Image (cartoon, rainbow, N blue to C red):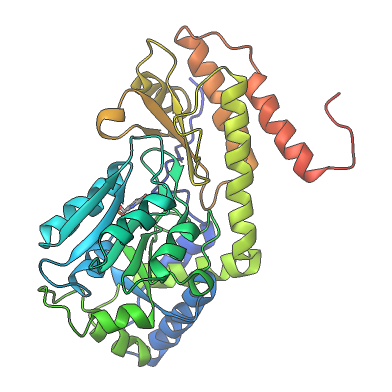
Length: 390
Ligand SMILES: *Cc1c(COP(=O)(O)O)cnc(C)c1O
C-alpha cells in the first residue's frame, strides 16, 4: 500500500553509520598481517581517545555481556564481597553474574524507574569495609534511568575497592570522566552509541584494577585481560579478532572523533530532552522521571493499552522497530532510543508515528502536538536568537 522503510530504532542494536557498514566489505584481510595490525593499532588508540582515558581500552569478541563477565572473572576471588547496584534488568544481570562466579554480593536494590543514590553506595562501603568491588549501570537501558557515577566514584575512590561500570549505553550519552573521576573498569558495546553491529565488547581498565588480576583465582581462559593487554601492546588481539567489526569500528571511531565525543553526548541529551517534552505534551507519563537517561526514554503506555500494541503499530504501519519493556515491564512501557547515530529527523518521525499509532488505538492526541514539542526543543537549541514557530 505504501512504502515502509525498515528502521531500527531500538537502544541496541542502534542505527548503523553507513560508512562503517560499507567498510565491512573490506574484510578480506588476514588478521596476522601488517595491514591489519595497522588498523588494529589505530582502533586501540582511537578507543582510548573516544573513551577519554589514558587507561588501556581492550576490545573483546563478544556482546557487551562478555566484557561484563571478563571484568568479574579476571579481577576477583571466589567469595569476594562486592556491592552491586540494581534498579533494572541490567542491574539484575550484574547480580546474577557476580553470584554465578561465587562472589558474595551485597545488593543495593531500588525499584524500576528509579536509581540507586550515591549515598547508598557510600553507606554500604562504610558498613562493608571488606568490599573489593562496586558494580553499577551508568545508564540502565531497561528503565531509561541513569546513575550518579561521579558521586559513586567519590565514595569508591576513598576505599581499596574497584569501581566497575557497565557503561554500555552510558558511553556517548553522558559525561564519564574515567581518569578524573577514577573509574576503574568502564564497559562498552559495539551495537550501542558506537553505531556498528553487535559483536564487540570494550573494557577500559585502570592500574588499580590491573593489580586485582594478580590475586584473581576465578577460572577464565578466552577472556584473559592480562594476555589481551600484552597482545594489544603488540598491535594484536589474543585470538582471531572479529575482523569485519574491527574495520567497521575504525570508521565509526573516525566519525565520532571528527564530531567530538562531547557533541555525540550533547546530541543524545538534546534528543532525550525533546523526547521527554513530546511525551509530556502528549499527556504520557515518563517511567523514570527522577533520573532520566539520555540513551533511551521509557514512556508508560496509556491506561488500558498494552505497550505491545504500540510497538506492533510502529512495525506494521511504519516498519519502525522500537523497544517494548523487558521482563515485568513488558506491556507497561515502550522505549524511544536516541543514542549513537540518531538525529532530529528520526525523532520527528518517531513522534509523528507515535501520534498516529496512539490515535488509531483509542488514545486521542491532536496531531502535531508531540512533534511541535520536539520542534520547539530543536528551535531553542539551534536558533536561540530568533523567535520561531509563532
Ligand atoms: C545492551 C546492554 C548490555 C549488553 O547486552 P548484550 O546483549 O550482551 O550486548 C548490558 N548492559 C546494558 C545497560 C545494555 O544496554
